[in-house]
Amino acid sequence: MYEEHVLYTKLARYYDVLYRDYIERVVPRYVDFVEQVFKARAERSIKRILDVACGTGSPALELARRGYDVVCLDLHDEMLEIAKSKAESEGLKLEFVKKDARNLDYNGEFDAVTMFFTSIAYMVEDSDLNRLLTGVHRALKPGGVFVADTPNPYAFAYRFGAMPGPGVWEVKAPDGKILFIIDYREFENVKAIVHFKRLVMIINEDRTMRSYFVYDKLRLYNARELRESAIRTGFRAAEVYGDADINKREPQNANRLFLVAIK
Image (cartoon, rainbow, N blue to C red; front, side, top):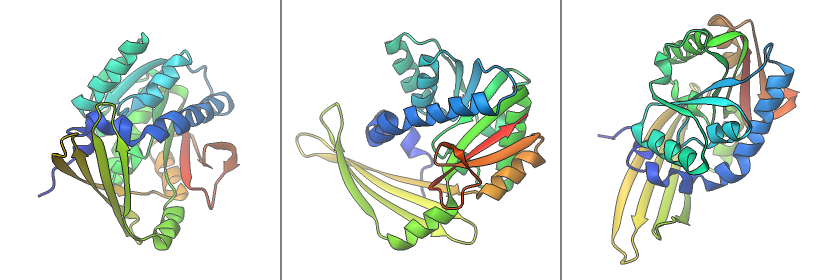
């Protein structure tokens, strides 16, 4: 039997090591895009932000550095503790809340809600996505904006067909351990379900080793599904942009889709 969410619990301390490139190179660019969305699409001044599925907090911290008041919400204590420690080390004031993204109970408290790094794809069932979007809509003030990113299923299917085999890589952690990783993805083309499998071997300096198996099931929503789901759950307007480009609406060949929904 698979243990759920190993990447966010037992491997939480290595999350920023595994995704170092995303944190250092991609997060600032995504936050640049989000700020462009705030200026172009939000119908109110943006100050207070709810970052859903915040993980170890990298996007939330970048938003806080830029002067926003950020509440970080995640399902896993381990991720929240790391995010809190990072915020404290920088002297940043953020609020941290443990909660399932499908059970948001805020009422008109935020100018914007963000959800980064494919987290929306964990809403595998239509009912999960509807619960998330309903909660986000309720949490926003009128004129507020929701931004979430996810892989484009069509681009993913193309890349998957071109490279069906596993990916193998390694990285050195700050504690001196070597992480050897084998990634494999199984893609259900009709339903756009991704079975993400990862074997992480943590190798100590004395060559002893322990291994963890990650298995996550995700659903890649296309632009139409994202837009229609947002409208169905009460948003006044919804658009989809490609690859963090404010000028790239309704993308056909983008690698990543960005849902932008207005209350």
